[in-house]
Length: 128
Image (cartoon, rainbow, N blue to C red; front, side):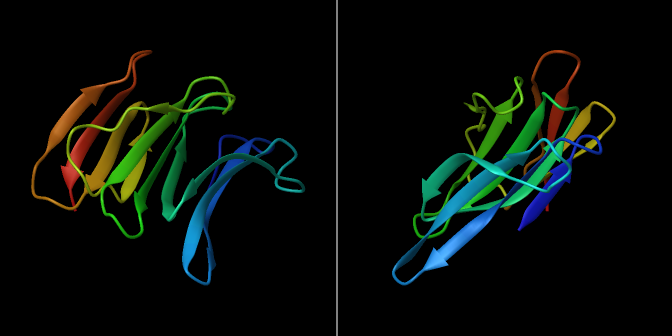
């Protein structure tokens, strides 16, 4: 399970809900410090591995497909009302973190790549 809070109230939690024969990746948001959660996204046979927030509106979620391989990098700029797929061409994403506005996405291969996401936010891709 991954949890990231932008401030004392707003945050996201993601992971997977395993069941016999599969799993579902669930991403939820809280606006009351984690007392209650509202589901925002769900993918079949998927696990959210890492979440990172810039502020209460801007966040990234990274995960992988449990059986088919490959991964997704998702971004919201509106508090999770809409999540945009910003996945670079590579596969196997497992992690993301930010140092100020510079982001790092960890992948399985040895390549290092960078991607501009606007609003002064660079997501730099680095091997694990």
